[in-house]
Image 1 (cartoon, rainbow, N blue to C red):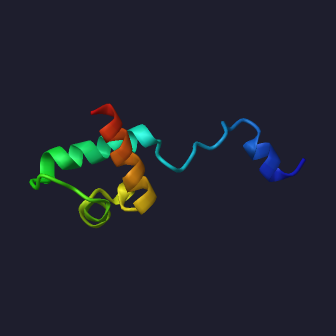
Image 2: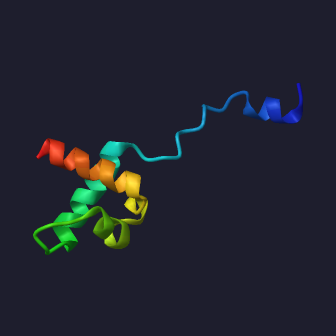
Length: 71
């Protein structure tokens, strides 16, 4: 057993780096309620003006779909 194996022995497994979809949808909802004044929003708008964690097109669409599904 080397030094690194001994150091990692008691550590919990690393958490997933990507935030879960519900958190991203909540961030999008907060952004829309606080900052967005137009009647519609597009994926392009979210990618340009939205929170940094949702500026990826796939994440923006996934978060918007969750909000649309939940009403």
